[in-house]
Every structure is written in structure tokens, then in C-alpha cells.
Length: 139
Image (cartoon, rainbow, N blue to C red):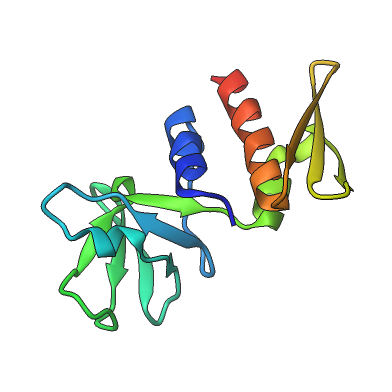
């Protein structure tokens, strides 16, 4: 799983999230909300946390199963934690290969004929760093 820092960097770089069932996310709420809430990882599911379209945009509605009193948060208050397969899919045609090295993974992408490599012990983090480069260059 990618780190909170990488997820926030992807959001800031312009990665757009359209919540789907099974997606994982963290909350990034105002300072008056308890820090434990921000450390918890949530999963979108019609039974517990539902993505609802509203006139303001998309809200993530908590359907009475959480331990604390939070009805819904705006999508802007959530930080998506894309899975490895989602990260790879988002790289689209730039993805060239994933290589297992002795103690890490190497993701290679190609942008405008330039081969770029991203290495990390966690393959999701390597994919995420490659995606951050791609999204940053596209904006």
C-alpha cells in the first residue's frame, strides 16, 4: 500500500478519484478532528461507506457502522489509497515493466521516449512514484 505522503502528493498533483466499491482511503480533516480518525484506513462499500453524488460534488457517507459520529465527508477531505492494480492501470500506455530486484521492485515507464525508473521495496510505492511523475508532467 502506498504511504499517506505519496497519496497526498498524488492528489496535489491532480490525480482525480472517482470512488468505487473496494477503494481504500484516509481522511484529511480540519485540525479540530481527532488524529486517530485520520490514521484509520476506510474502504468504500455500499454497506458501510457509500460514495454519494450531491449538488456540491461527491460525499463519502458513513452508514452508521463507524465508532465515531461522522455522517459524511466531502471527497476533498479524503485521500485515496489506490491499490497496486489501480496504480498500474493509471499508468496506461507509459508502463513498460515491473522487475523484482534483490531487495526491491523496479517500475519502468516511458514518457515521450524517455525511460524512467522508480525503485522501492514495496511495488505499490514504486508504481505510485511513477504515477506521480506522470501526473505531474501532464499538468
